[in-house]
Length: 433
Image (cartoon, rainbow, N blue to C red; front, side):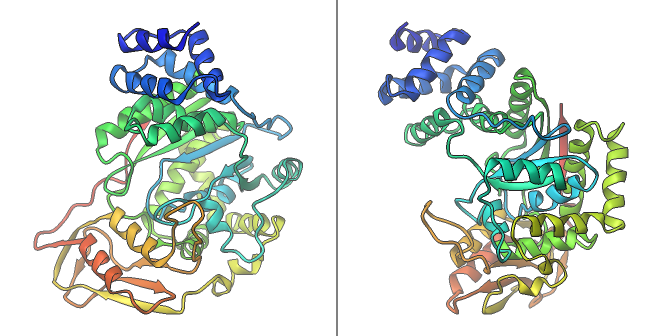
């Protein structure tokens, strides 16, 4: 078998066999196929696409290139959740204890952030003492005991994907549905879950700006997951404004605590209930989505959800007192209000611009080695469709520096205000299963 023949085959729009894809991924991972040949293949895939079968073969080959996490020692059906990214997306912080509180094991491996704010691990490390670096036996024991644990991703998962992504990044082949879908799903499958719930974002703060593109990606990932033997569903949710009000690591922890107490923002609460209901249903802990939702609401109302958060935090070395005393979390030195320059209805809050503003304060990374300031960020005071008067507070900057003029400008630019009333877009556009 020769790589040049496979490149030519795909260039002509023909489908690659499972054996051909396995050969290609194995040889490339082992440095037996040069970057220039794999770059040619990626470009051929970019233009010629891949069939559903090819996408499943590619995903499985990438899974097989590295370590596969064995969660069979954990009792019950393990359901993972993945978000394609957004601004103010603290759903994992809420869903992990929430879903665990109804008896569904949540064994989650998360990553660090590169961009607007830190990732889930950075946010959890806002909690004094919280340890995300647990060995596998401790991880499994905690999930069996408490139904929940969140740790850092193994560096040995899907090395083929790591190599391919780095190459895609420099060959203008990132925006390819089969390559995006197989990249995401290979990591989810390698992480050992029995079922997968996907939160595919669309809008200004999402990777997929257009709804139709998000639908195509969601369907591709669902098809791959089911084709690989994992029960998979996807929700397409809106990211045309930040989710919730808080954007920043410790700030999002505070908002997650409020949400688990039943005091969180409406949109964040609703998305967590929608995603969580799917997780509970796929884990066979409810006979319907509606029943799953009722169970989750009950645990919020009776305090079991917030109680599970305390157990989760304490079991991984964190200080559970922050649940009742969130002022123990990192706090920025300065809080600076951003005032509206005109009156009217808010028609848009460009999520990506709010994310950039938070990153400028130090809430995110510009490189993998950048330090994250866990205390800083932006807290919105208004959402799309709200009416504001001139000089009303649109947002509050939490900063450890006084020079924030460019951040204020960025936030003001993100808010669009008009005279006519505004109907907000749906939070959830579609469920794909």
